[in-house]
Image (cartoon, rainbow, N blue to C red; front, side, top):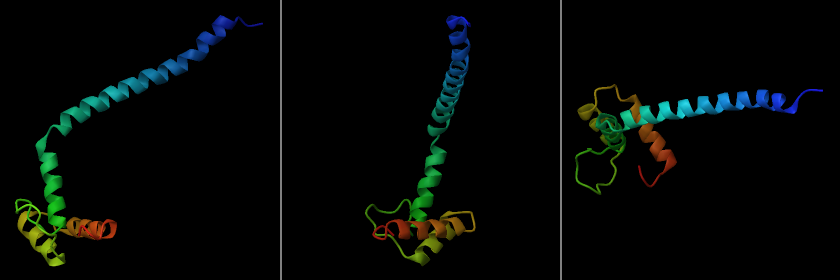
Length: 102
């Protein structure tokens, strides 16, 4: 007949190892997030991509109505250095997700 205390001791180690691993991963994620979320270059790039996909200038006046497809292409050619496929796909996505927005 096994001793109960010894058996329970061996069953708790896998749970402690999992809890320790989760704590280490949560700490690493917190450090990574606090380091990268405070960088403004990330937020600027994504916000400008959003405004371009609406056919608007990111520095334009507020409450400007969204532009049409050719405004998206024109703003992408002026303010963006990539070929523009992503901007057009995002314009289509915004139009499908919320037709009142785009």
